[in-house]
Image (cartoon, rainbow, N blue to C red; front, side, top):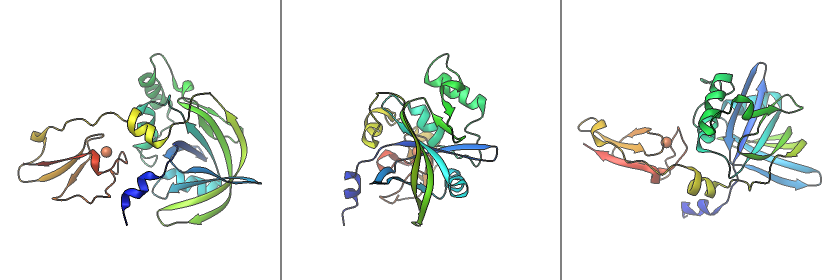
Length: 225
Ligand code: FE
């Protein structure tokens, strides 16, 4: 089996948001699809390691905001490269900082609004959102597949949707060269050129995915000192 076959599948990119009690949270997913038309059903698969997963499972509702080609890398970083288990992604000061990075003078109110279901949807770098009610769930090991009924669907802009390929080619920063002097003598380190994560070991598995930024082995540089 050629594992590269997997790269021939195309995906969109989305922010899945949920609320549990006082906690608002969201993560990036690439697996929102319409799976039936009558009745209209949308499925999303969410990694069980994500806090958002537990919140959707518990509350049985979420919003899915569709990322557009206007989305900035900082938005992916904010929702995708950190976990709500240790960071409050909706803290006003964190969102103010994010808004300023994305566009000078903007504030948290330029990042999200709250839908009728009480859950935030992302307004920065998105072109639509769905409010979803979970109807069925399927345990798939690493992920749970939630099959959902849309309770609200809103178009926010005419910008094209961001595909995973567009993200890889146009949004993700070009991999940065790594400073070899930062690696201790006698060690072999694979350093992620996108986020700086270090994998220590002689060989890295071909299917390795960076735990921080989710990029693959091709974005790692091997450094031996
Ligand atoms: Fe990384």
